[in-house]
Image (cartoon, rainbow, N blue to C red):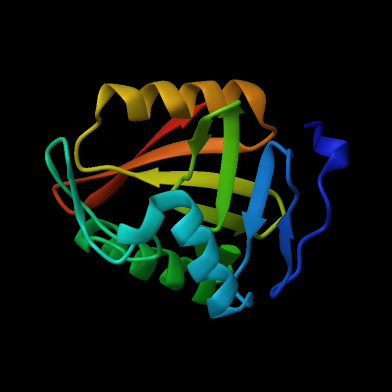
Length: 158
Protein backbone atom coordinates (compact mmCIF):
# COMPACT_ATOMS: atom_id res chain seq x y z
CA UNK A 1 0.00 0.00 0.00
CA UNK A 2 1.40 3.41 -0.96
CA UNK A 3 1.78 6.12 1.65
CA UNK A 4 -0.51 8.34 -0.42
CA UNK A 5 -3.20 5.66 -0.21
CA UNK A 6 -3.44 5.82 3.59
CA UNK A 7 -6.63 7.40 4.92
CA UNK A 8 -6.56 10.15 7.51
CA UNK A 9 -7.33 8.57 10.86
CA UNK A 10 -9.53 9.93 13.60
CA UNK A 11 -10.36 8.44 17.00
CA UNK A 12 -13.24 6.01 16.72
CA UNK A 13 -12.52 5.14 13.09
CA UNK A 14 -12.21 1.51 12.14
CA UNK A 15 -10.87 0.49 8.74
CA UNK A 16 -11.09 -3.21 8.01
CA UNK A 17 -11.15 -4.12 4.35
CA UNK A 18 -11.42 -7.75 3.30
CA UNK A 19 -8.46 -8.57 1.09
CA UNK A 20 -6.58 -5.44 2.17
CA UNK A 21 -3.02 -5.63 3.45
CA UNK A 22 -3.81 -3.04 6.12
CA UNK A 23 -6.40 -3.82 8.78
CA UNK A 24 -6.79 -1.05 11.31
CA UNK A 25 -9.02 -1.14 14.37
CA UNK A 26 -8.81 2.07 16.37
CA UNK A 27 -10.53 2.13 19.78
CA UNK A 28 -14.16 3.11 19.50
CA UNK A 29 -15.34 0.00 17.72
CA UNK A 30 -17.90 -2.21 19.41
CA UNK A 31 -17.08 -5.01 21.81
CA UNK A 32 -19.18 -7.36 19.66
CA UNK A 33 -17.03 -6.61 16.61
CA UNK A 34 -13.89 -7.21 18.69
CA UNK A 35 -15.25 -10.52 19.98
CA UNK A 36 -16.10 -11.66 16.46
CA UNK A 37 -12.63 -10.72 15.21
CA UNK A 38 -11.00 -12.57 18.11
CA UNK A 39 -13.09 -15.68 17.47
CA UNK A 40 -12.16 -15.63 13.78
CA UNK A 41 -8.47 -15.28 14.63
CA UNK A 42 -8.30 -17.66 17.60
CA UNK A 43 -11.25 -20.01 17.22
CA UNK A 44 -13.58 -21.01 20.02
CA UNK A 45 -10.79 -21.08 22.63
CA UNK A 46 -10.26 -17.32 22.35
CA UNK A 47 -10.77 -16.70 26.04
CA UNK A 48 -7.92 -18.97 27.09
CA UNK A 49 -4.27 -18.00 27.42
CA UNK A 50 -2.11 -20.16 25.18
CA UNK A 51 1.48 -21.35 25.70
CA UNK A 52 4.00 -20.42 23.01
CA UNK A 53 7.78 -20.39 23.09
CA UNK A 54 9.11 -18.79 26.26
CA UNK A 55 5.83 -17.86 27.92
CA UNK A 56 2.08 -17.47 27.81
CA UNK A 57 0.48 -15.59 24.95
CA UNK A 58 -2.26 -13.44 26.39
CA UNK A 59 -5.66 -12.83 24.92
CA UNK A 60 -5.68 -10.17 22.19
CA UNK A 61 -6.05 -6.76 23.79
CA UNK A 62 -4.44 -7.83 27.09
CA UNK A 63 -1.05 -6.26 27.86
CA UNK A 64 1.80 -8.02 29.60
CA UNK A 65 3.84 -6.19 32.25
CA UNK A 66 6.43 -4.75 29.87
CA UNK A 67 3.71 -3.53 27.46
CA UNK A 68 1.88 -1.92 30.41
CA UNK A 69 5.09 -0.12 31.44
CA UNK A 70 5.57 1.12 27.88
CA UNK A 71 1.93 2.27 27.64
CA UNK A 72 2.54 4.30 30.82
CA UNK A 73 5.68 5.77 29.21
CA UNK A 74 3.69 6.67 26.06
CA UNK A 75 1.01 8.30 28.23
CA UNK A 76 3.73 10.53 29.66
CA UNK A 77 4.90 11.45 26.15
CA UNK A 78 1.29 12.20 25.23
CA UNK A 79 0.85 14.53 28.22
CA UNK A 80 4.13 16.25 27.30
CA UNK A 81 2.86 16.81 23.74
CA UNK A 82 5.53 14.62 22.14
CA UNK A 83 2.93 12.24 20.69
CA UNK A 84 -0.74 12.76 19.84
CA UNK A 85 -2.08 9.30 20.64
CA UNK A 86 -1.30 5.60 20.73
CA UNK A 87 -3.30 2.40 20.32
CA UNK A 88 -2.45 -1.02 21.77
CA UNK A 89 -2.79 -3.73 19.10
CA UNK A 90 -4.45 -1.08 16.94
CA UNK A 91 -3.29 -2.37 13.58
CA UNK A 92 -2.91 -5.70 11.79
CA UNK A 93 -0.67 -5.99 8.73
CA UNK A 94 -0.88 -8.70 6.09
CA UNK A 95 2.65 -9.81 5.19
CA UNK A 96 1.65 -12.68 2.90
CA UNK A 97 -1.63 -14.45 2.03
CA UNK A 98 -1.85 -16.29 5.37
CA UNK A 99 0.72 -14.36 7.42
CA UNK A 100 -0.16 -11.39 9.59
CA UNK A 101 1.78 -9.14 11.91
CA UNK A 102 -0.02 -7.43 14.81
CA UNK A 103 2.43 -5.00 16.40
CA UNK A 104 2.05 -3.89 19.99
CA UNK A 105 1.51 -0.15 19.48
CA UNK A 106 0.42 2.18 16.71
CA UNK A 107 1.72 5.63 17.70
CA UNK A 108 0.65 8.94 16.14
CA UNK A 109 3.52 11.35 16.50
CA UNK A 110 3.13 15.11 17.07
CA UNK A 111 3.68 15.71 13.32
CA UNK A 112 0.77 13.27 12.63
CA UNK A 113 3.06 10.60 11.18
CA UNK A 114 2.41 7.02 12.28
CA UNK A 115 4.96 4.71 13.86
CA UNK A 116 4.80 1.05 14.80
CA UNK A 117 6.35 0.17 18.18
CA UNK A 118 7.03 -3.46 19.07
CA UNK A 119 7.92 -4.03 22.74
CA UNK A 120 10.04 -7.09 23.46
CA UNK A 121 11.79 -8.51 26.46
CA UNK A 122 13.19 -11.28 24.27
CA UNK A 123 13.18 -11.62 20.47
CA UNK A 124 12.00 -14.87 18.92
CA UNK A 125 13.39 -15.35 15.39
CA UNK A 126 9.98 -15.19 13.71
CA UNK A 127 9.13 -11.86 15.39
CA UNK A 128 12.33 -10.26 14.11
CA UNK A 129 11.66 -11.55 10.58
CA UNK A 130 8.08 -10.23 10.64
CA UNK A 131 9.06 -6.72 11.69
CA UNK A 132 11.78 -6.62 9.00
CA UNK A 133 9.35 -7.76 6.30
CA UNK A 134 6.71 -5.27 7.49
CA UNK A 135 9.26 -2.43 7.48
CA UNK A 136 10.10 -3.19 3.85
CA UNK A 137 6.45 -3.42 2.79
CA UNK A 138 4.64 -0.63 4.69
CA UNK A 139 5.23 3.15 4.86
CA UNK A 140 5.64 3.39 8.65
CA UNK A 141 8.69 3.82 10.84
CA UNK A 142 9.08 0.55 12.77
CA UNK A 143 10.75 0.56 16.17
CA UNK A 144 11.65 -2.38 18.38
CA UNK A 145 11.59 -1.28 22.01
CA UNK A 146 13.50 -2.92 24.87
CA UNK A 147 13.86 -1.80 28.47
CA UNK A 148 17.44 -2.08 29.70
CA UNK A 149 18.37 -0.90 33.21
CA UNK A 150 15.22 1.24 33.38
CA UNK A 151 15.81 2.94 30.01
CA UNK A 152 13.74 2.42 26.85
CA UNK A 153 16.10 1.49 24.00
CA UNK A 154 14.92 1.75 20.37
CA UNK A 155 16.05 -0.24 17.34
CA UNK A 156 14.74 1.24 14.09
CA UNK A 157 13.78 -0.93 11.10
CA UNK A 158 13.54 0.77 7.71
